Length: 404
Image 1 (cartoon, rainbow, N blue to C red):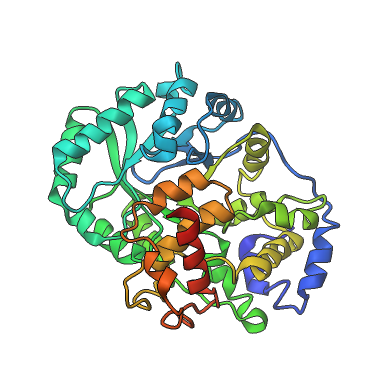
Image 2 (image 1 turned 180 degrees about the vertical axis):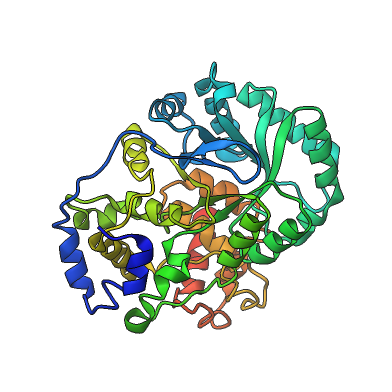
């Protein structure tokens, strides 16, 4: 086994000339065995003093209290939800599943506070979440899916969080985001001391340390160069950093044949993310006990083998040009009708890759105008706007037909 740092120094797999097919073949003969079972690492979340499991429970795709209790049994201590997840039933499930252990875990929820939201309106949203969660307080309350600086500039959000903290209804405030304007939103929130925790999309396919090993032969580039700078800035200011979207589209079943006896793709992808010194932990949607058992096997930050790096490389080669980097910003402005391309494609991913039409439709309805304009467009304005070659007009039109 080699450490991630040593691996990057040596440029193994690609740098030493090991081809993709050889790396994949090696993955099939990995001498390790898949690890299942228990969380093995707990991290302090920035300066909050909260300690969380490094792999934690995301509830956007589930509303089953039994799954919550199973996650508790394997050592998960951080549970993430939102008022919008499954029309509130995810919060209800967490409330039931966490009954009796509330003070032993860390609970986060979210609301989409707009640029014009009033503090009374945001407080009503919080109180609705408290009721569904059957709790008196939420540890971290996020302004959810922020893709517009004006939402963080809204003084009503700040005043609401100050009031909610004084009343003991929340302990810390945060911002979550994965949109095309994520970097400037993060920069503003961090500079203005508006957040204690950030929740952001980050995976191996967005990591320049990973991509630099591939550029020469595979021509992948860093399409969101400001992301690691923002994570580093958050760390410098002792702001907690939680990663999401860590499976890069989560096409786990397609990569199964190449896992063989080594760690699974999911475990390997998690370990890469957790090796980043700027990341305190990650959340991932958990929809079955078997999935939870597999996911927590990535806990503990073990080093990646050459073959496991090859597994991530195979995934990137297979799906890297079929996965929209939702925060890359490079297609922003390509549409003369103002279609929010990356946001539309994110909802398509929920439907096509995650197989979760409920989540896709719920998020799509918040995109003003959706992709309606694409239905009567030639597709020429955005034809070459994606550096990865994603067929933008084809996918946005498909999304409009699926979700409108």
